Amino acid sequence: VNECLTSPCHPNASCTDTEGSFDCQCNVGFSGNGLNCFNVNECLTSPCHPNASCTDTEGSFDCQCNVGFSGNGLNCFNVNECLTSPCHPNASCTDTEGSFDCQCNVGFSGNGLNCFNVNECLTSPCHPNASCTDTEGSFDCQCNVGFSGNGLNCSNINECLTSPCHHDANCTDTDGSYDCLCNVGFSGNGATCTNIDECLSKPCHVNASCTDNEGSFDCQCNPGFSGNGISNCTNIDECLNVSCHVNTDCLDTPGSYICRCKTGFKGNGTFCESDLSEQGRINLAMVIGITIALILLLLVAGLAWYCHRINKRCRIPRRPREHDEFVEMETMRGPTENQPLSQPPPATADDQQYNGPEIVPDLNKDNQGSNLLC
Image: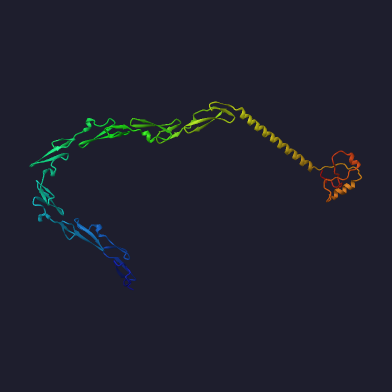
């Protein structure tokens, strides 16, 4: 199958049918893989003559000789324009590479294409730092102010040698003049200079003091700070080197320190003595605390005794009574709905005579270790 019949390649490429495939090659002036082709800018390789201009075209380029040259663009030759006498009759023509130059003859002035008899001063015969005065058939040159010489040659005069500026200014000599500039730290026109108070602009650190000097200033860190006074002033921890009273604590503050009496002492920090009223308050607090602790201890002890008392099991000897059986029956039966658990049986004569603690008899004689709660 001839794949090239379907034009698989780029429009700016040629297709070659191969065995079972095809090959695409970009045309001259294009680059790519054949499927995609891009125009090559041949002008980048400067194929034209140095005196020609190159124009890139689609797949090619065009060379045109520059003005003043002739040829096919690949080869360009200079054209001698002076052969056609392009200049003024009172001017001379000079052929140049690709062009020509016209110069008016001596005694004439103009662009060479047009020349006029003019004042010689128009041709600036004098020194650049001199003025020209035209005369009949001639001219006169005079050096300008600040220069000395014959007008054709003028030398600068150094005015700074006469110290024309203020004593706080610097003099700079210039061509034909001089310049006065006030020194750093002063303001004015150079003829008069006044000291500038730099401290008004606050150039120092916030923790420094500024001192204005003649033409300058000085920054000193405040007491309690250290540094250069301009970019940094760091707080000094005086507590590292200062010894307060033995009964005080040292507290560092910005730029200073404070000696403060400890708790229980009073004074001005330089000297501290025991504060009896404060000590009294401390002692009172201790007494109150101890008293409360003792009361709580007694309450806990009483509660423990009470709990032990109501949980104690007791046993007493049996005495013959008429109502023993009744007591035993009542005990075994337990309380009724109308009789509380704590209500005792009716008292007998024997009970009236017994003044000891209330006793619950042992109802289970054969059961060792089985007792009633008191």
